[in-house]
Amino acid sequence: MAEKKLGKQTVKLSNPVSISSTYSIVGPKEGEGPLAKYFDMILEDEAWGEKTWEKTEAKIVKECVAGCLGNEKVANADIDYLFSGDLLNQCISSSFGIRERDIPYYGLFGACSTFVEAMSLGAMLIDGGMADNVIASTSSHFCSAEKQFRFPLELGTQRPPSSQWTVTGSGTALLSSGGEGPFITHVTTGKIVDMGIKDANNMGAAMAPAAVDTLYTHFKDTGRAPSDYDLILTGDLGVIGKKITNELMQSRGIDMKNNYNDCGCLIFDGDKQDTHAGGSGCGCCATTFCGYIYNQLKHKKFKRVLFCATGALMSPTTAQQNESILGIAHAVSIEV
Amino acid sequence: MEGIKRMKSIETKKDYQEYVDKVTPNSQTAFNILKAFMVGGTICLIGQFILDFWTSRGLSEDDASAATSISLIFIGIFLTAINVYSSIGKFAGAGSIVPITGFANSIASPAIEFKSEGLVLGVGAKLFQIAGPVLVYRN
Image (cartoon, each protein chain N blue to C red):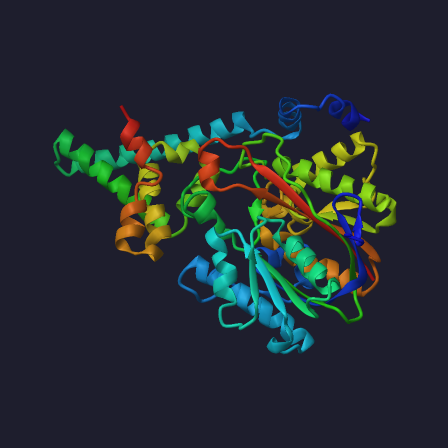
């Protein structure tokens, strides 16, 4: 019997899992954004002394994991599992970033939803008695993502207003069976939602229905309402996706206008930083959470947060073959 | 609520696409065309000055045209290398893509980007990533 299961897609942890430590590294552009003061490290340039963007991203992962463990002074040997993922083919930033770590490792791909996917799996392992300390980490890099998904950086093109800006950065969280919190209490695992959107320059619209599906299911499974949370936070829907999510939820009779926000809208100042519809990438919600949100939870400014990361499951090949963009969203409920 | 009214009829993927089209802002086409016209025109004007220069140096019409193309290609690649052409392109759109300087930019930018994968499978194989379709279908 799955006695911890609530409804169809939610797990209620019997022993809430503590998020004992977090660390965030961001690029220079994110370091000029509204959340700058909450990040642990801001890079001075996009390359960080490396010869390729892929090496830079792997270095960001490496240093971010090191920073997270250093914060809490936990030895490598105490870590039972490490879950990590990124946007690059075959998740190379994660595996190359942690290759010297000597920790049992699971590489994940959930596109930009990977951070919450990693937190969900880690929390369930700990609650299941299979681990005491688990690291959840993700990264993205504007330059490596442009190279893989779009055009060379120096190509002179225009971006449409609905396009989003891939965040350069990595966020790492240490989950523990003991600790002072904040605590992960519920995990809602999302399903793939395909509403037929094919425009890779409108990821917010492609992912919003998945966020709506997961949030709606979470409220149904737990019997909670949006008002039970200080903040409902989606991963990287951006301005357009946020608007769609609000309206779709409203049409289902759920009003989240007052306490809903999106990491893609928080991390950049759209008017000043020319980021069009907002931030995106695995690093977007990971750095926003590990920097800003974790700080607010620690200072009890937020007491209960529903954190729902959204991902677009696609590749340049599927886009060229005219397939639609599949959306996914995973949520965790976090309280102090 | 305006939002609810828009939403009520969404049942199919087609409904959703129509709704998304409504909430997604469009590019400022008229303004973009004006910018493209101004910048594209300026590039052509510079080309004309270069052509006049080569002609004044005593080159025949054909040779002066070839020298002008070479000069513009050099300028396009130079501006790409010093990270300026991408900013011009962001402002001008088609205005800086269509002239020969844009073609030079479309060759130079993958060369810079894929240098890290080596001269054969990186630069060599990816050089025409953007320009390839133009060469294949230009007629």
